[in-house]
Image (cartoon, rainbow, N blue to C red; front, side, top):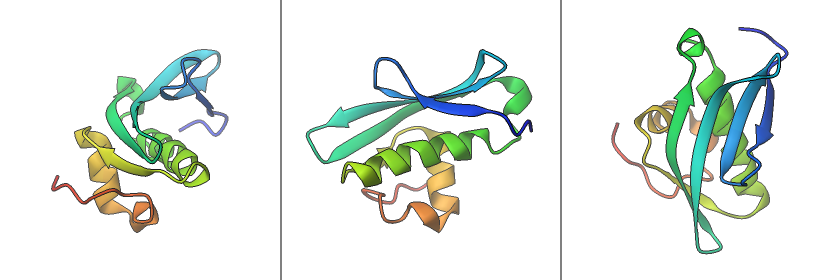
Length: 100
């Protein structure tokens, strides 16, 4: 996986994207609920990056945002949920554990 992938908040403020050479190669979409919760609705990853850490890094972006804004996260996206279940680094922002 290229090391110069950039992660940034979407212009509409409803998620994050991964950019490589000026092209969007991944996106994670969130929905804000009240002032203290957020839902990961979906992730889209280019097929050539599906077996990389791209989705994990996008989930990290959401988690860092949640920490800064004192929010908890619920993931409705199976791909993101599997990352939540696999890595304990997200336990502090997890709203509840959803089986994969």
